[in-house]
Image (cartoon, rainbow, N blue to C red; front, top):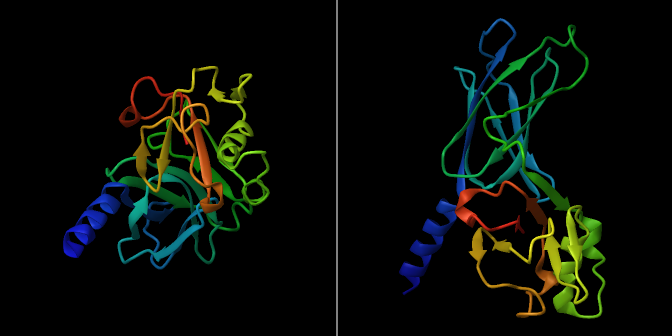
Length: 217
């Protein structure tokens, strides 16, 4: 039984994680060896580093599905930052070109349009809001956090409505979708004290969440 549970846990984690990889070069296209590459998500507390190999390549394995900031630095070059989004097990590939420090002293920020869906709005709930949860009922605290995000509104009963929809929201807890409606009107929500970070996606939701979902939390 323990062996089976361990196997299923490993498989579940693998299904909700992917690979981020890429290549770093200079303006002329020559590969840069030994560049420091950092993949981070402030809200999740995720921070991993890698170093480019002899081919200028780097890769991160078992990266949880989420949005990330990729920071590349090397002596003599301007630090470059790129926003990427990992939504499936398909590896995210990115090519990064570093400019010489003497050419540009500013941080270069570029978007990978192939990885980030253009019409989606994604908001992170900050740590202060999570640490200072308020509300008469503990089961209302998660809804209060969601209502702090632009694009959500509540009705007379306090239920939140993303983009005006009738509670068409899906919760994903540690990568596992929860199909139950966790509104206080229908059921008790989970204990907000167990929260580490919260993000809310509104609009252009990925197909795996269904075609009538207006928010993914």
